Amino acid sequence: MTEHAIATVGGVLTERAAGTALDRLDGCGETTVNRSSGQASGHAASRSDGVTDGRPDEQLDELGDGRFHGELDGLAGRRSDGCGGVPGSRSDGQLNLASPIPHPRSTNGAPGTPFRGEPFRLLVIESDVSDAVLIEQLVADSGTPIEIHWAHGIDQAVGLLSPTLPGARRSRPRGADFGCVLLDLAAPGEPGDQAGGPAGVHTLGGVNGPDGLDGLRELLRRAPHTAVVVLTEADSAELGAAAVAAGAQDFLVKHETDGPLLARALRYAVERKRADESQRRLVEAELRGQENARLQRHLLPTPLLDGAGLAFTRRYRPGRRRALLGGDFYDAVRTSDGTVHVVIGDVCGHGPDEAALGVALRIAWRTLIFAGLTGEALLSTLQHVLEHERRSDEIFATLCMLVLSPGAAPSTGRAASGHPVASADSAAPVGPGEAEHARLYLAGHPAPLLLRPDDRPVLLPSDQAGPALGLVPCDDGQAVWPAQELELHPGWRLLLYTDGLVEGRVGAGSRRLGQDGLVELIGDHQSAGLTRGRLVDSAIAEVEELNGGALADDVAVLLLERNPVPLIMG
Image (cartoon, rainbow, N blue to C red; front, side, top):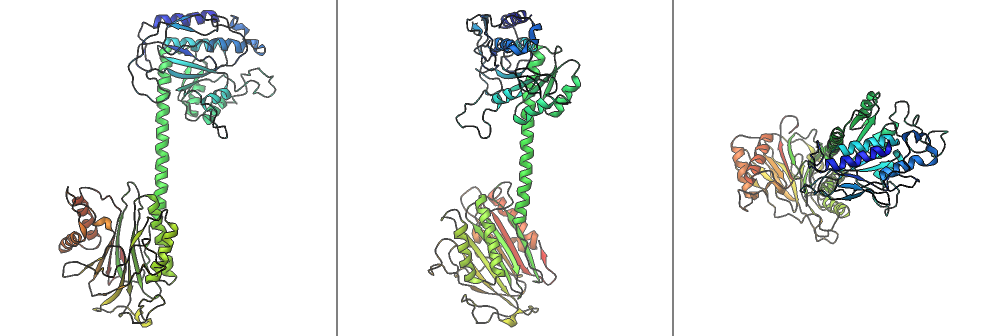
């Protein structure tokens, strides 16, 4: 029966070479059956016709003398060059092919899928010679260029599928890239796997566990990215359905499958596996995105302004796509003496490293404020933090810091840092109609806008501005950041922003909006009666419209104003 079946395979090859194959994987009319000559192990010598000793299938009970392995060697040793042809005989037991059929025109394909010059690689895990012959004939009848590789069990198959295991030597050669695995659920793991089984004896029962799927689970565990189609007996259709539920892409029933059905099953299995992998990667990306969003959201500050009597509106838009955090940073806190400290800054660059550095500077700034530092002493210490945390010496950060003192103007006394500080009795609340005083520190940062109730906005003076943090050393006195004294009259509002808001383009040319353009734009929106969040949102929207789309740089905007009612943050 074995010799007759193999002769049938050769006959089908000759007949199909001139015909049209149904449901073929690559859409061409050629028929090619390839065999790999070294995949199935065995010890019996092969005859010149590719069959070991021609013994009938009844000899399968003689599993211990090596004849079974020789049978599979005879099948696996017959191969082709991937082009199809008329089988002949060779003394080495391999299939001799002639009259190659031309290949179809090229279409690029993913590894493991049929395309020009490379047939579909199929790894078959089979332990029964008669079933192996059946698979050979199905492949021949499929009309599809398929190259068969054989494995006797799960361990051998995994060795072919995953040649580079953890801890393996880097020099170990890579195996073939298989498009799919065809697993006979009756195939054992390896010789002698079952407890008590003699060496070299394949035990068909027990190794697959009570549900018969342990081999499949082991295969999926050790080769998780490979498409798998399982073969079952006619009375085990439920087992096939259970195999699909366990992770296989499809199942086929022996003796109820023909060649075209096998070809379709292999093709669909590969596509289903690819879709499953894409879905898995998508879910993983979504989970990572959610985790990153939670992390970035918690890294954004929560202003601590309870009891300050201020309205605080902030808007933050990173320049990076799908990011919640950029290199811009801001914060606002009120200390126990009633002083309000506000900061806004910008780390040069747009990547995650710059975003992390911005978070580090913001946290360091808040820590230094609560430690009692302010003015130049704080900025000098913050520069030291920047110098230690940045990844290269070219990284710098601009910064604008506002210190709003409660009550009357600060006294002429000076702190250890050399800057004026509010006197102890200046912590009294600001009375109606009283002017407030603040100190402004600029470190290479754009000056804020002062919004007045009955007049156009104006830029605050920046003649006292110092260099950006990280540009020049501060230990030798080269970097200084003197304070600019401000007097804020009732109805004042201050707009602090990063340069991303003013560096947007105006129209299709190269002209930038600039600070003067921002003053005019904010004045127009203020004249329209917009306040607080609506004012900031409409201003950003118009800047983006003028730019012709979203701004490339990070944008942070703060609007601070005296509010007679309890704190409002927008």
